[in-house]
Length: 272
Ligand code: NAI
Ligand code: 15L
View: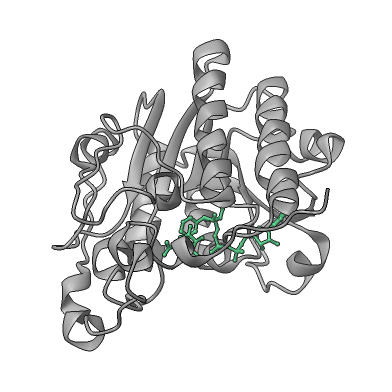
């Protein structure tokens, strides 16, 4: 089998999804580089074949060095939940700017960016959203930062020819935790299928796709983008419906809007 990449970088490698993905990414590159903040990286137990490089995404010089010799990046690093603005600004906004500037200067060809369903979390669950047709409606600081990530990805494709697949991941867990996740679930095997497709599909340019399994109750229509990637999900949350469909968020926006529980977090009185 031909190996698609000489060097592939996985950021956020010590996080939940990073630890799930790292073993499956090994066959895609002669060298897999895995990165995260120093402490989590040291205790993550990532595959020994991977090259571990600690790096804070908020440090521009460190990110420039991290991307040296890299062909493609799977970018998972950053704050992964709703919260106060400043940590999100450092990791998800400044960090993304550092990543794309480093990608430009180090001639990286493609980024797979872990965006989020929370870019469109303020749409009603009763509406089906298409990523090429429907505008972002972020549901908080976190969703807004992912919208920035998609914006910078678009800019660096148009101006600098760096390809990005933005994956608006739903709920990536071993099984769907509640009724909302019957729409948003992404099984862990489908996550690896999707990231592999996003890395290896030819000529993606700038593309936004939702990251979910073939869920019967989905409120995203991502068929066009999936076809372009050659992603064919194999799992369906419906198999878990009897166990979780009674597990509901409290009445109101948390139950009716696509962002679910994130609708109940914040606002934050940031220090002035
Ligand atoms: P996680 O919180 O377990 O992992 C994120 C990793 O990023 C952590 O290991 C953390 O140490 C690292 N990180 C945070 N700030 C950093 C910084 N300044 N410099 C370097 N590394 C930093 O999150 P998870 O669940 O693994 O998510 C991975 C990515 O996928 C995130 O970008 C998240 O927003 C996105 N995502 C995840 C979903 C899910 O269902 N797990 C759904 C939608 C999006
Ligand atoms: C996300 O973006 C989060 O990273 C993850 O922790 C889940 O909360 C997920 O969205 C979700 O909406 O279920």
